[in-house]
Image 1: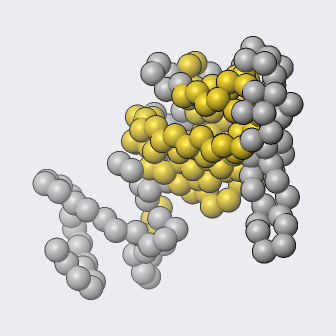
Image 2: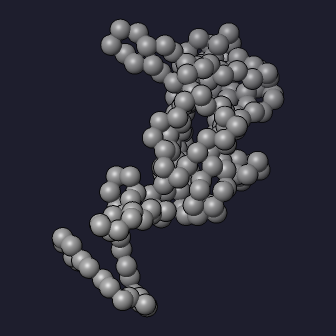
Image 3: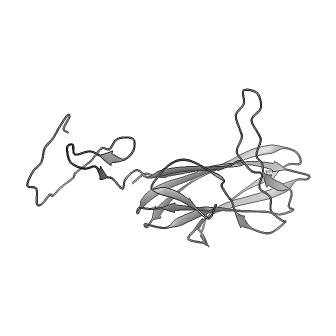
Length: 184
């Protein structure tokens, strides 16, 4: 463990472990030299301020219309969460689900590069005019440029991903919030 500064010069070969800690932006500084960017600890958070609906029995991908903090993870075509660098990632979503007009069963699952990922589906029974929250976390091994989508489907067309506007001291309730965090 080294605390403080370390100057290494004329290094041509390194063996063993080498752990680098970056600042909050993922940047290593070699002052007075130019900055070096780390491809570790990529993150992104995405959310929707729109109610999302589907026809009964028709699957679709969740869409996002807002981006929060991102570094190395981007939103493509409003649904594809794309990683710039290979690694192990945690993908977590929290969806505000409402039975709007009747009880419905809502399923949600993960897709990678347009293909369903086995063993990732979850379901919830949305009772008529009642809300519930579905939160799921996945761990995935990604190659550079892989993209992930949260897919969903309902059985009767009454299960919605519901957005609520801010009211008084209560901030906006997005219909879905999804975070992507590199963990390795």
